[in-house]
Length: 108
Image (tube, rainbow, N blue to C red):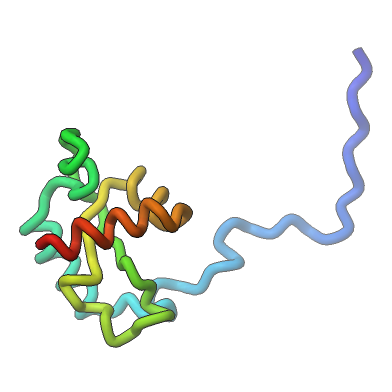
């Protein structure tokens, strides 16, 4: 079978990291790093996984309301939840899943 000719690209391909700013510019400062470490020490398992009966370590702390939308709630315990990597990606993409995260956070 013949090979498909390469497509013509008008602009150079962008690197994966070029569209993002660094963590400090997005609001994740030293105080957030310390808060996140303490929170994950208190909640070593992903809270959504634990609610579903699974045992997965918490890799990150997820903001239910984004820092851009509510910067005053960055270090608010009612606005964060410990999640595994898979759940964190899903919470960022799916509003209904994020609402379930909010319900678990409010029960605490």
